[in-house]
Amino acid sequence: DTAVSQTPKYLVTQMGNDKSIKCEQNLGHDTMYWYKQDSKKFLKIMFSYNNKELIINETVPNRFSPKSPDKAHLNLHINSLELGDSAVYFCASSQGWGANSPLHFGNGTRLTVT
Amino acid sequence: DAKTTQPTSMDCAEGRAANLPCNHSTISGNEYVYWYRQIHSQGPQYIIHGLKNNETNEMASLIITEDRKSSTLILPHATLRDTAVYYCIVRVGNQAGTALIFGKGTTLSVSS
View (spheres, each protein chain N blue to C red):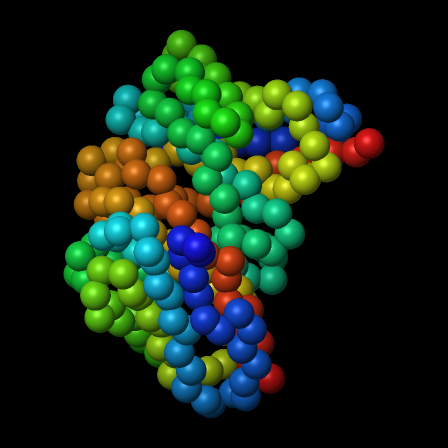
């Protein structure tokens, strides 16, 4: 059983399109995150939700909109895709948002914008 | 979050202990030390974390100095599958909206 699963694993699309990445966790956690890893391999936090409520929103273009239908899911919708959006996107979850709660990551979605 | 300093790369022979150092001289009293690793382009994998005391689990041991300004991750018997980028992260406690802030990490190469 995969604890944090993301779909799709690979996503190739053209500039200007709108796409979504789905994330589900079966760990019973109440906090979920989206991270972006660019071509230089830096991992950056984008968003965090706790009990479906947004608690972290880093400086991310408003073309990116997270949606949490329930505690087990955090989807990422991206409008008007740009070349610079090409990256690997990782979803993660933790039990609570405190510093004593490890994050568990999915295996990523590699987005390529052409 | 306090910043960490790690060596860019390290080598280790298979079967030997891998000792990965991390400096976090500006760490605060309520900040935890976390270690993660990333193999190829897989998702970061949680290894271990601690506040003040040394910690051990099935994967590794974490040794934190008494002044908490540095720590060492120990992989007791490194294997080829331990080749990865290892991240040392400090994370502030008891604040809403804390997340892990990743640095550049240490690339550990285990060879036979």
